[in-house]
Amino acid sequence: MSSHHCLKIVTDFASAHTLRDYPGDCSRMHGHNWKVEVEVTATKLDDVGMGIDFKKIKKATREVAERLDHRYLNDIKPFDEINPTAENLAAYFYRELTTLLNGPHVSVSAVTMWETERACVRYSEDA
Image (cartoon, rainbow, N blue to C red; front, side, top):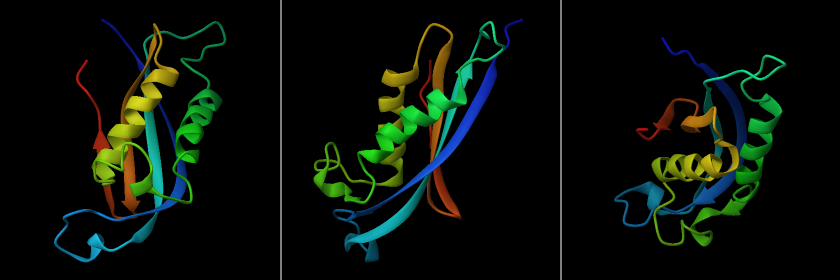
């Protein structure tokens, strides 16, 4: 039987966006205080007993968030071409974090993007 540990960190950032072709108020520029939850799966612990240090997950997530913090998302790649929806932001964070964190025994398993305190999207990919 295989086992794993799921580690999770939470951080946030603020940004503005406009949803192109949206039939409502969100087609006008507006902002959000986004909350990002990152889940990482570890299949093996190191000599200290950790799958991955929470500090490493936080640092990588902050690195990605800083690219977007206090910015107009529609001006930043890839959101200059795709809509900066919560769904697309979650996928963006997931893909960027996999390049920064994935290793032999550690992988990003999901990213949850909270647009408001009551609305979020969770993104993951099949192995």
